[in-house]
Every structure is written in structure tokens, then in C-alpha cells.
Length: 415
Image: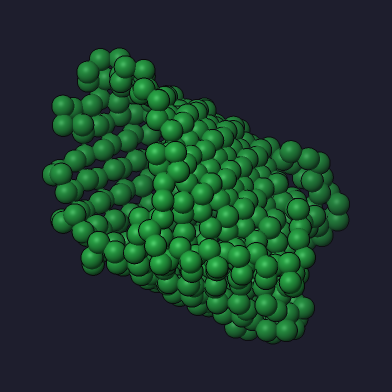
């Protein structure tokens, strides 16, 4: 449902602010023994470069009167978390309404929904069966044009682990994902994929783990997509040429989890993958991916998480080209008091695009992100937060670079 701006949108915002403001004077109460929470939130965001335009691009050239804007977002949601014997049933739904002060053509409703069953049979067979569905505005960092593209992502997943002996564990996973773009220009990125994986691990008495894994993934375009007129490595493409993003991918690798001390934990994965496309085979890739995560918790109030990785780009964002993302981040969290929390993030990533049929070849983005936020939590289900993020991207693609600063203030109340 697409609501209109003006008094109707302001009415939702006023309601959310009134609820949060009133509740801030008294502690929230629990529903059904804390199994269910109903919540509301209001967020103000200042984005200095909404469409992620290069400094060398005049906003008027893409139909924009300026670069930045204020975005007001109202949220209403419900969360359920119900244990039953050794099982746990989870559900969540969030609806949101975003209103832009200037770029009101981007005003939209969004939602996210999740249902999951965390199953456990005598601690021998465990896993999760879940379904998620979400609709949100696509990131402008991918196309840098004033298009209102709402992306719907549906995902079903079943994971399982069987502790065959006290030391050996077998794992399995099946995942199906479907991504749809509302804008006709970007519908070429629609994708359906399925993945099947299995693994075998040795587990020590200290819960350290080392194992091997194997997985297969199949992807394809759900509709008969066509390419717009463009160039691919100097060769013209006919406007309206049929395009199928079908591919097969195999992967084999090793994983480990190592707990050095109760305050120090390491998780690692190394995998060799082979992806083959039916069309535009210059996107084919054979090579390694890896991820290393180290989490250090020297005190109950401080946590430092560090990640270094090289992996395939996120499927809900990039589809017409093969993308490798190499980089890492450092994220400290500090509970100054029982009610005040600080969080930081320093991130660097290299996005390597290979054989993109829409742009005509290979290019690379390099992104640096620094951000910080503070949260005040006067009661368990009531909090206020504020933060700022600075991103600078350079690119070998013409006008693919940009700079942006995003700040926000948010209040939330739960019952």
C-alpha cells in the first residue's frame, strides 16, 4: 500500500512521537510474560548525498534540485519469542513509512517479516527452519540515479546439525532466495537462487571445531529479461536483447572455530569456488574466498570485533556482474554505564566488478566508512540513539565515486 504525504504521513509521525514521549516518563510493561513485544519508533536522518552522486556530477543533470535531504521514518512492529520444551518459535513483523522533505517521489512504505522454528531434539539434532520477506528502497550506491526502486527479497532456509558422536558433527543447509525490483530499468537484476550445502566437523571438549564443507548454488533470471542498449568490451548490444543470468557455482572449503579463552574467540573459513555463467562468460570465476573473525571481550562492558574477508558480493544487491568484495572492519562496543552505550565502526572494502553487461566491462570501487553512535536506554524496552557515518568511495568507473555523511536521531518504545 502506498500512502500519500502531507497530513496523513504527519499523523503517523505525531502518533509515534507521542507514544515514545509519553512512555519515556515511565517503564514499559511486558506482554504475555515477555514472549511478545509491540514497539514503535521514530527516526530522523540527514543524508548529504541521497543519490550518491560524484562531486563531478551536477545534481540537475539527473533531475535533482540538490544533493541532500531529510528523511523521516516511522516504525511499528511486533516481535514474538516463544520457548516450548527444547524448541523455540520466533516471529517478527515491522512496517515503516519514509517521507523525504524534498525528494518526495521517493516516499515509500516498507516492511520486513520473519518466522522461524529453532528446533532441538535431545541436543543431538538441532537447527533452524525460517522464512523471511522484506521490501525496502534499493541502495543508490549501485546505480546513482533518482529511481524509486523497491526491492522485495524472499528467503526460505533450513539448517540442521547432527551430533553423530560426542566428537563428530554433520551439518546440512538448504536456502532459496528470490529478489524482485519494482523499477522496470532495474528488473534485469531480478534473480532466483537455490543453495545446498553439507559439512563434517570435529568438535573438541572445549567446543573448538575444525571441519570441511561442500556446497552447490544455482541461480537464474525469473523472467525473460532484456538488456538496454550499451557496450560490452567494445561490441554493441542490440536494445532488447534477451538476457538470462543463469549460473552454477560449486564451493569446497574448511572452517574452524577456536575459543582461546572465555574472552577470546576466532572463527575462520577458507573456500575455493567455481562459478560458471550461461551467458557473458567473461564473468566466470574460479578462485578462493575467505573470512576471519576475531572477537575479544576483555571485560563484560567492552567488546572488539574484527573481520577480514574476501567473498562474493551480496545477492540482493548485485546480479548482472560477478562481484568480489575484499576488505574488513573493526567494531568496538562499550557499555559506559548500564544505560549508556557507545559503538564505533571503521571499514574498508574493495568491490571488484567483473564482466558487467550493463557498463561494458570491469571496474573497481574502493570504500572507506567511519561511523559512531550512542544509545541511552533508560528502561529495558525504551531507548534513544544518535549517530553519524562518513563514507568516501573512489572508483575506476566514470562518475562512480562519491562522498556522503549520514546522521540520525531515533527514539523507540516497546511494550
